[in-house]
Image (cartoon, rainbow, N blue to C red; front, side, top):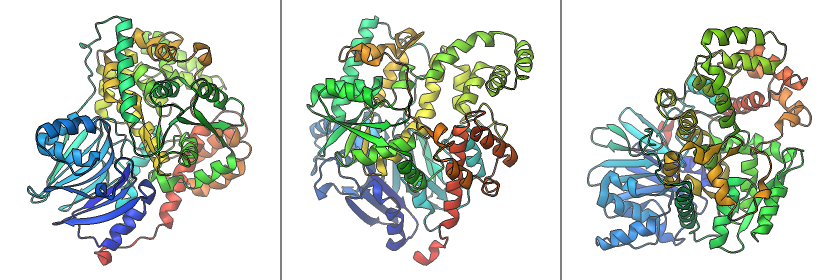
Length: 614
């Protein structure tokens, strides 16, 4: 787990050092800058596998030079196969295996890798850069290609150092809708994200860049699992056991994030069979309705782990809020970023790698929104004209909740309702609220022949899991030099989940059915007899009490006028609705706080020309 950077621009080491210092938290163990012909590579290392300096990066393997962020979990198997093909190795690292695999397979090496990765290889014999990003976008990759030059980095702020970049107002509009900036756009004009599951080639002779896809979900419905439910459970159990096993390998201390919910408890129960007395970590809130630490402690005790409970209070929350932009670079409004950062901060005191339960909800239909979108199907069988008349009647109510229902049922299709709820169903305060994440993903959501629940699940894997969940976990963990691994995001498990009949995963009031039944083979089912709870902060109450002054001070009319794309008067009314208790507006307030902070911090950054540092 590291921070990478590279460019074909003639930057000085001084400027590149500034760029690497910007993300030193991603890899504090070793930093190096190397030049190969007209290419410059730099790397901040967080040492996880083969701690010897021989595995430091940038790394050279014959005529290949590489910078790599991530882990290839199956690299030892790939290495054995390559050794049979007479490749030789001088380290025990996965970095060297990537290079050898690229020599053997070319771009097809990506199909062999099971892991999370963002890397670039410079092939000096061909004067070509080859780079790639993992299937689900677990590791970030930003780049800028213009005027015959190429620059890439782990975080967009690295590219911004030494440049006077312009803010992309379309990116801000997308952020206001989705809470994050969807790929391939970034907050800066000219800086893009390499899409997940894609690779590129950059020819230094012609300055041409080609981007290609190496993997995708199967959006067809002709590969449905043909076995019995018992067969499916056995197959999934084997996949999860192996996914956990290959993620338990590290040359540094390792633990598990434990929320006490289905997914993290399943990961822990499998890991605990393979490693005794694992360290586990959970977070505790004092506010009623948010604290699940007792459930986590119960699971930890049953599985005999070395458990640590971390308490979160609003004072520490403010400190993390104030520093959010330093780690996330771009505006990012998933409020669970704060407890994720706090959990990572304290976990790092004990371990350097932590397993998590991410992706269980997306792949196995666990979110509450899947339940209600299924129930809402009946009303969308009514003609649109009837629904609009019904909406007109409902909207006469002074109750905001009824007005939201009216907004929802007047939409043309139920897929449009799903998109609006994921974004912002009540969006009159946003000036351009019709932006879509990606037309291709939206068209697949609408036009796929799969059942509705499968389509929304596919959509979430392609968008929400990538843009929100993985961004949140990567930045939160790396802020404290902690590596997070997600066994349920193993591509084999995700692919298998797409083949399962819906009723294997979902039954009314029984979501994630197959995962639960696997879990109950390890833990008593009565431990989980409670409603699903998200990993959220008690901002609804804090914004009306301890943090009320903070919110009102940060979101004045003057501050809101700095934000492009919003109706300031309507936004002020929205904030007032929350403060007076008329309606819960904490998601919108949090979104505005993050964006306002980001805009203000940009004005504090000294701007200068990089020409003086070349």
